[in-house]
Image (tube, rainbow, N blue to C red; front, top):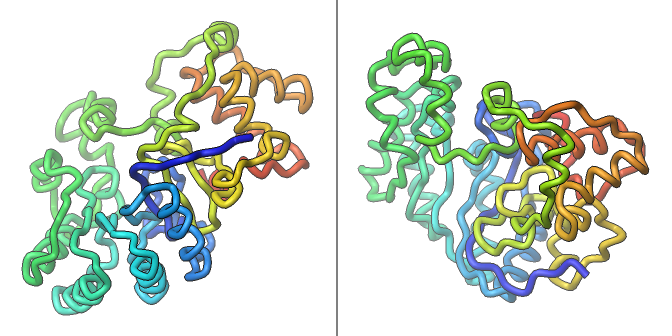
Length: 325
């Protein structure tokens, strides 16, 4: 059985729909996603299971969770009913219009036991969101004593050097700060190179042969990690930012059937070789000569299985990850 007995720290993905399509997004969020939102009933089930597994606080992210405040409030009410604390809510500040309306939103959040916002401050988000919105939201937070977790202040001076009334592309930053600017961002940001972030950066990464990658295969321990997991609006458990790969949280709690989740099971027990053998021998996957490491190979195989094979794979969810990446 695939089973988790306890969890320590993680987050809730309330929606994948987003106001931007950032090049670094691990979860491939974008405006193209359906405007689905976590319901109160799903939230109750998820928070109840988290409590049983020893996880007493979570953060909330997306997509952009604050695009629809009326949909977020029932999730916060569910957290309170189940005695789950909210560490912070992640936001890109795109919804900010003026201080008065922002203060109204912030007071509503504070009335539901939310006392910190993680506000994105980086060139990736600045491709879509003017920096003036970020600064305006931070000022509104200061006015009502809402805590701010800025991610990351290191980029403040970079963004401040540009016109804050409009978005700026990464290429504009490269022209200002030098040709190595874009390639330096993952280490400065602490970026997890999976999802759309991997697609963005793999042309710049060193390649290795398929044979060498498979030869070094080992069980993927990230899949059973208890830190920085996520549970999404569909009730999918997503391990340690390994986006596009999941198991129904309710089944993982009880013990999920490996036969139902062959991708997850192969990776957890045999690593990338196990998944590659499955894809090549049973579904006709044709390996490329080179990949930017085992995560690139894994994501390529999973995309093939999700988009090119008629069979539905319960562990390659949500399906939108592969469509909107």
